[in-house]
Image (cartoon, rainbow, N blue to C red):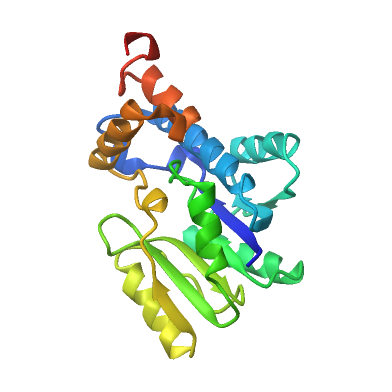
Length: 229
């Protein structure tokens, strides 16, 4: 099913505070920029995403999105969220915009899952039909890294700790078919030093999966240089 992809993006300076012990503020901002670049590349490589809506208060995220829009055919727009109130609020603004544009399905996607695979996302969206909500958990099985919903406003997003069950319960109460689907390429987001180490291990072995993120991790000394392999 063709979908509007919605990517909420926090201000870079406020992002990834749990990485403060291993990355300073400019390093965190550079990593977030790289991850967003890889996510946008994957999303616009799909056959199922008909448009991308980036919701952000961050000017650098807007510039990345609009620069990418000039290189691809998939329409990308940036929706301003000056208050930067949080992920659920930004996602809700994106849903409202998607509905106004006539979208029948919404894919709420993270900007910090740079391993996202276009083919895997296409396959998940092919399983979506009207009246279905797919909850994509994180690697710990308790959070939510993505929501695929038809209609786009099937439930209100409630990201945060324990959100996998919360989203599933909301969808069940609203009378929708619910699927909790593990998508490998959407399981690893980067919030903690342990997540960062896990991402570095994956990209050290296979940097082509997220080239911008791999290049940034190499620059930060988190993975081996290409010439040393």
